[in-house]
Amino acid sequence: MGYFRQAIKGVSWMGALRVSTRAIAFVKIAILARLLTPEQFGVFGIASIVLAFLEILTETGINIFFIQGEGKIKDYIDTSWVVSIARGFIISIIILFASRYIAYFLNSPESYGLLKLICLVPLLRGFINPAIVKFQKNLEFNKEFVFRFVIFSLDAVAAIILALITKSATSLVWGLIVGALMEIILSIILVKPRPKFTFDFKKIKQVISRGKWVTIYGIFNYSFENGDDIVVGKLLNTSSLGIYQVAYKISSLPITEIADVIGKVTLPVFVDISGEIARLRIAFKKTILIVSVLVTGMGLLLFIFPREVVMLILGDQWLSAVPVLRVLSILGVIRAILTVPNAVFLAFKKQEYVSTITFVSLLILAISIVPLVSKYGILGAAVSATFGAALSLPFSAYFMYKVFKRK
Image (cartoon, rainbow, N blue to C red; front, side, top):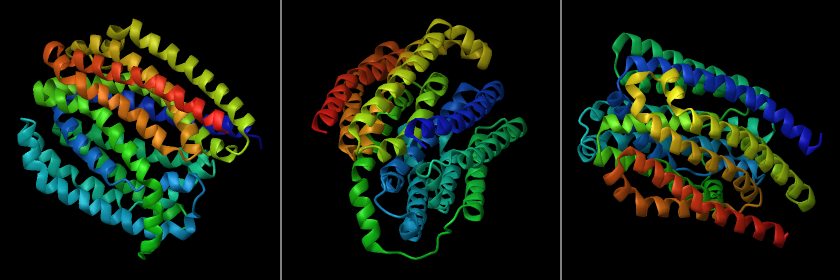
């Protein structure tokens, strides 16, 4: 099967997955926005920011290692699983002991209890079978569809039911816990090879050596995606943080999800044809054209009708998110377009290019975020993030020129 047919088949399955899960996400947000307050979303946002940071900080890069074809999954699965369990345990302990200080730093005593609860999530995720990366590596996106759809659905249902009962932000965390438990069960029962509790230090050293740029990129990307949240939570309040995060999520769901679907499918395809530069150049041009057209259309919809979108999904108590959503729609388009060259860089094992591009965005955000938030509130945060992403585009274009020129 040619790369184009492979890509179309993969995009069809992943597209179906994203459409269905994001439809569930929209329903979930719409229901929870009427059951919980912006402040409660902000409190959950603080807990999820901390969890995401520690998961990124300890990322091994094993998935990229497998997709790039540098090791057979069956030879590394046991070691990867043991490291994953240890990683989850370490993250949980850090969150548990740091929760009081984090709540104090962000002036949010309400987040203390939620942080103690969310420490269960990484502990559970550590037991997930690492062999699930086979779905992406082997382009088995039909299996990925079933696997992710079940997990995501249970997460959403659990969060909504508990929110109806408790009217508490803990319902969001329990949704994550239910999803993690289901992923463990399905990955161990359905995915082969099943991991065993054995460890080979040489193998994990090899993976980490190749994955260090993936980790660095992850840290930069996390800092860019969450640095504005941290500043908003510190300088403003949890209610403002909740409004900003929900607006960010709405702006990214229909835009970057399109690019994520295509990017997840094209990465293994780009790896397969990386030795045929003419085919890869054609594939890149087709992919970035399709992504640009699709995400620009979605971005314009959000930019022109932000009030209608907010009223439809969230309700009138969230109307202060309207100007923020308009700016963030531009950010969503830029980030979506950047996913295509990033897939090419990873196919050529140029993780450092992706890290550099992300660092540029982070640097601009770091310089501008505090003065803009101080003066314009959450709208200033949106402008800072958008400006940072826009200034990374020339760097991405330069690295693409280097890759194709060299080859």
